[in-house]
Length: 139
Length: 222
Image (tube, rainbow over all chains, first blue to last red; front, side):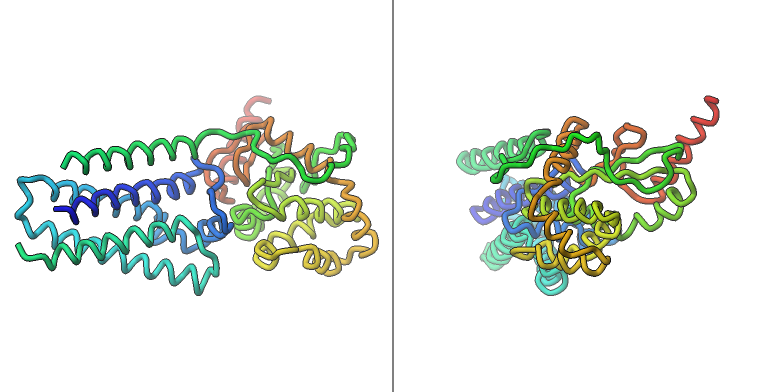
């Protein structure tokens, strides 16, 4: 149960990080707080969109779904349901794979690092590890 | 379980508060300049323009030479804007420098453009700065690169260097920035059509649609 709770907290933090980047993309937030200065470069690159939608929007939706599922999973009534652990592990693995691709693009194509993208990468990596640990637990 | 919900609430409230703080309007954000800014010439200079004074629609952009979105607009959209709107006499396009405090080389880039303008080559330097932004934006000191741009567009190097060293257009750039702040500029690039703020995503297609509709309204009013 602790692992599911940790996933829920991390997913909620991920929602806010990606929401921040999405609001910036929409023009609601003017200047990104970015010490390296690479955030603007990354956000203005063509890789900031994926299949016609902002990458940050995928983050908002992805973390939102992870948060909803994990919040459901922490309820006592759902405690024995292993299927929720499988769903969490699959979602987190997909998010982790997408993050690997985006980080590769930052490092080897754009040559700029956005600290908010790094924050999101750390969050999704932690969620992926926790969800796999939860999946390996015996019922 | 109670501790979990308290932690969740803390993250939720903290995150929401942070987003509200980040989205607050900050029209006057700008640290005090570290070097004295020469007095503005107060010459009534209102920016370099492209297109005819008699064009029916006037677009003003507040832009930052180090801003990637501004570079993206200039390299991707501006050629179409020039071809479809400026060269056809529909629009006069005015550039106003708006160096953002988060970009450390914006100020010197704006001065480089003004010094090129002194020799009649503002737009050539404007294009050099934006098209080659990735060559200087992340460097420690872009002055040498700007000097290369000056040579490339055929400026008199000695006059250019003297102009940069004197910072004589710092006042003019500051005037432009203050004008932008008064107009409500909070991010770059920010466009104004006949003085009205444009809030859409700046694409040449959307610009053409807006300009054509503005011209149609003006024709009907006659």
